Amino acid sequence: MNKENKNRDKDQNGVEIKDKLVAINRVTKVVKGGRRFGFAALVVAGDESGKVGFGHGKAKEVPEAIKKATDSAKKTLIKVPLREGRTLHHDIVGAHGSSKVVMRSAPSGTGIIAGGSVRAVFELLGVQDIVAKSVGSTNPYNIIRAAVDGLKNQKSPKIIAARRSKKVGNITSARESS
Image 1 (cartoon, rainbow, N blue to C red):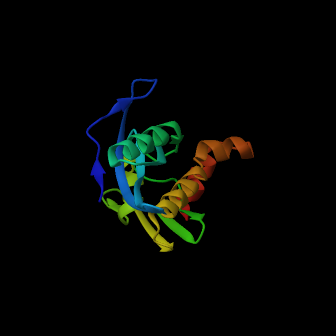
Image 2: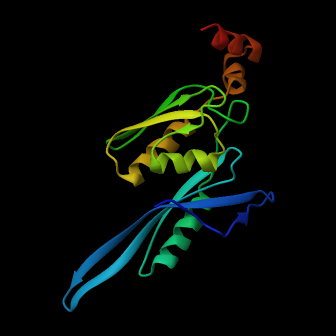
Image 3: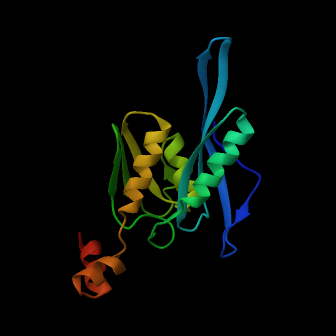
């Protein structure tokens, strides 16, 4: 049910932000006169060069729910450091509730090997080579939250070197030798 939205906005720096609809749920409220239907939408947004966010919106009509979710996703963008602009610096595990997403960096040419809702996160993040596996609950809301949780914990060698008062070369050479 992935659908790329035709409307692309630009953030404050003029970078184009794209969004993808991941899931729509119809929710029902039973009242005295019958049932009232509402819709919940889950949207992932990103600039395809290191920023990604997700949002969720609810409304009586589908387009309004999608618009609310898109606005929410664009407000919650996070910056993720990428190696060579195409993959992760190191393997990470993100968790939320009973959902867990294992994300592993991959060599050039691998592509995005990931399931539905996690794939949308990586496509809009701008990752080209990654292997991901979601374990546990298949609820798209929790899977995306788990993936974003893991991506928040991603550290670049530059950040680690600064924290340890070492040079970046010392840290990256240790990575290539293992």
